[in-house]
Length: 372
Ligand code: F6P
Image (cartoon, rainbow, N blue to C red; front, side):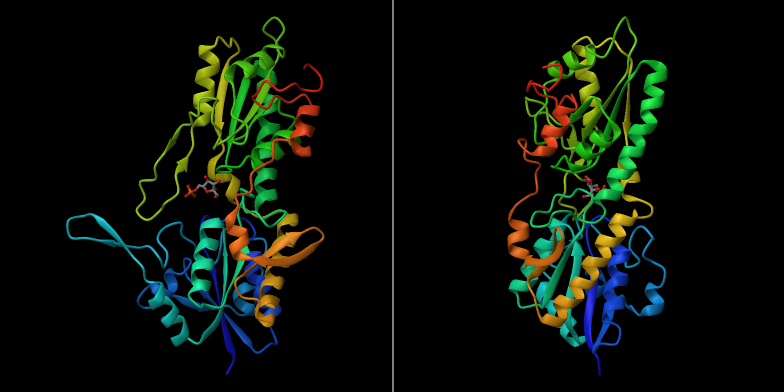
């Protein structure tokens, strides 16, 4: 009888998830291992009856360019905080991790590959500490996981955001408008900064550098001569002004601990107008378009490398570890190390220097190369 490795995808979906799943299955072919998949993260194990599928060659054929995940995913609950509704309508959260580990043993699962973001990898670490043979694969469009140069899905999101900037440029130029594009990224500005540089935006606002609306206004005014001119502002959803204000809302979804971000672009528009910005403004919130559709070739390659590596880590018994990209290699790091630190952009990094060198305003009063 073959040994069993179970694959799960957790957290928000991300272009490239299917390419990872396919690579795991292909690498496992002709070994003593059989690959199975759990529906919607670990819910497939905890649900009664279990929702588990065999991941064979047929199941993964041609999925490498499909967005989303064939296994389904969830941002809610999980084995350590399973939501249970009380009779009075309130909710409690149960720790079902021991039960899940018992069930995995009963199903003959000897190893687990958990593909997910920082929240999912924290769950991986907790399960590892309880004795589960688990391996993490980092995924997120936000690129906010440390201990890896890049996560798959990020470059696809950047491509989509850059295409949005390109489109906004033509309409902004036609109307002499300031177009504000809000992109995802949670507490990190990676998607915003990459797409702002790639799209040639005039202003880029990221959470790592609190913004001063006055500094932005000064920069914008230099772009206008007798009412003529245009500008593109790319703002990350997690951005905050110098007073720490950010429009955000608590999630109303039971079991989803994440703050739901969105709307800071409207806050900035309001601030600029109040300061006297004369140009017409329009806001575009790009939202989940950044996560949908096919992964670009770069992400398919990275995801395939991650999948092959993850299975090879199973073969080597490298449990408690996460796949990591350290150019030009794919290596493994401890999950513990990976979840300890959030991957912010360093304000003194060459990427920020590049933006400033392009005369892009980063929302602060630091001097840019050209206009000072
Ligand atoms: O982490 C990926 C991400 O798309 C973030 O950029 C964004 O803030 C969040 O997920 C949105 O989550 P949801 O899909 O739950 O609305």
